[in-house]
Amino acid sequence: MSSNIKRIQPDLHCPQNQLAGIKVLKEQNRLNTDIALIDWDLNCQAGPVASSDTESSPSTEAFKDNIDLSLNKIFNLLKLLPESNLRINSVNLDSKLINKKLSFSLLVNKTAQQLLITLSGELLKVNVKVDLNSRYLTLDGSIALELAGDYVNINDQAKPFLNNDLEINYQSDLNHWQQGELSVNWAGMAGSYAEQAEFRLSSKLQLLTRQAVVNELAVNLKKVKLPLSEQQEWKTGYIKLKLAAPALINLSPELNIKALPLHLRIGSSVLLSKVVRGKSKRIRIDTQKLPSLFMTVSPQGTASDIKADWSLSLLNQTLSGNSSYSGNKVHFDIADNKLSAETLFDSLGRYITEFESVQLKSGEIKLKMSADYDLKTNRGQLLSNLNVLSLSGEKSNILFDGVNFSSVLDYSVNNRKVTVNQDKQQLKIDSLFVGIPLQAVQLDAQINATDPVIQHFKARLLGGRVDFDDLQLTPPGKTIIAISGISLSEVIKYSSYPEIKGKAVLDGMLPLSLNKSGPTVAEGMVFARAPGGYIKVPENTVIKAMSSGNPAFSFTMQLLSNFQFDTLQAVIGYTSDGESDLKVEINGINPTVSGTQPINFNYSHKENILKLLQSLRFNDELVRQIKERY
Image (cartoon, rainbow, N blue to C red; front, top):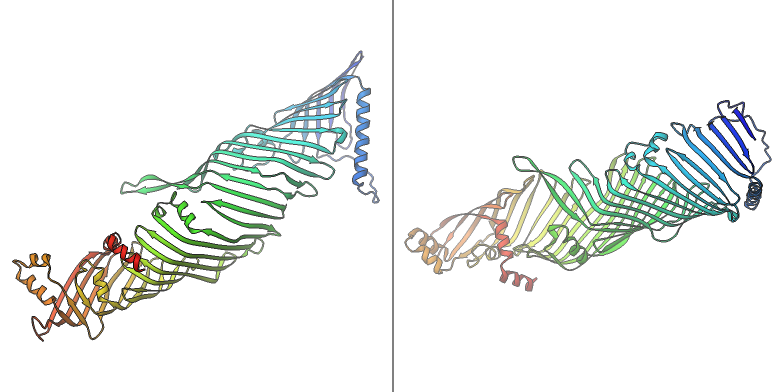
């Protein structure tokens, strides 16, 4: 027995909704149905339906009972139906939610034991199997992501990530239809950012309570490459994000995360920077190695009100804090963390050349920070408190002990305008040896947003002290370095001629300029306090050899063998490459050679101060004495 129907239009209000080319054939105990075409406009509203204001949503128990009853009716009906085949050659769905019609074929096969449904289209492929005896449902589906952009609007930046198929599996015992297991898997490329990418999700769904218990969530990226700018690119071997423990998520009335503990791992990475070198302006790639990273994050809440506790492990240290977003307000907080300076510097030495030669003996770092920003009013505040305590150690024979640094920042932002409420930076060093010893070093400064300035500097140096005020560190900067109470004998001790004896107290002023190439001093003045002092150059084999055959030099050394002066003044120049130019004028007498007759002595000397300090730092005996003394 057979029947043919040319067209059916079920709803007069939506004449475009139709079934066409319907053929039904019954052969013995089997029913075969073919439908050539189904066109359906999901945007079209059916005729008005009477509603009652007294209707209310059923209780959870009543809702479950209704579904149970409906399922029992469906399964009882399926048992009564003969073995059947339904084949729909083309189903075309139209909706405002998609840019083009969603088309697929549909095949339904019913036997005495099972119901099989197969949906096949260019975007979607779905296979459904229902065991009519056990009522167990299995659904396997796939979505061709590379075609998703044809159906929904996707920005150009996201399109490269859409490749390969997204695979979906759902299983449920329909005797307990309210429970099911969902898994989602995808593997492909993350555009140009990762050569290999993988996503896995496995969860148990509680449909009545509208909850999901997620047992597995994993995102793996391999050979990651992220451009930061035209000049810089960041690369790492892998990024791994996975669930640390089962997660609990409420799915309705809005997505609400109750627990979602995540672990993030980023492998060792490199920062590649393009640098122009030489007159030829050749581009060279500089490589900066970066350490691996491990982070735990535990978000809770909804998309409009969410908070997360986190911890970050980096360079064998751990920072912890929390973040939140609520009502257009963003909050970020780093708890009061304590770090080992010794461990931190040792770890940094593996990645930053400047830290390789740093050897710390002790030290601790304390950090606390909070930031708030209102996205609606564009107002925010940053509070930061950093303390470095009791650092001691050395770097390339630069010795330091009792280093303490404190930083307090309080910035307010209002429509991109930054107001500095508090900006206090202070550095104190008990003792510092850079080739000459300094004690009681103190530096007070302000970061001043992006224009840092040293407000005051002072230190004990060579028996006296040096200090200056208000040096802007962004070139050009200028200040006057005041020198007071410097001991001439201490100056000579760290000079190129430490065997010379001398005594005087020196004061002076050094005009310091800071430009792009570094610090310079022009026309600096140093002079001896009244009543003056003395200089004694002892006779040694070197001086004897130089005096032989050189009467002028011999006479000069005789004058300086016991030179008592009442005035000494010097003009000092210094360039950014370390070269110094010293011009000294001394007035006095040598009672042994000239009695009371005044002598005017002029002396000029040039030397690279940076190289001199370096040579002093690597003088083993001097370093030993400094370590013992300070």
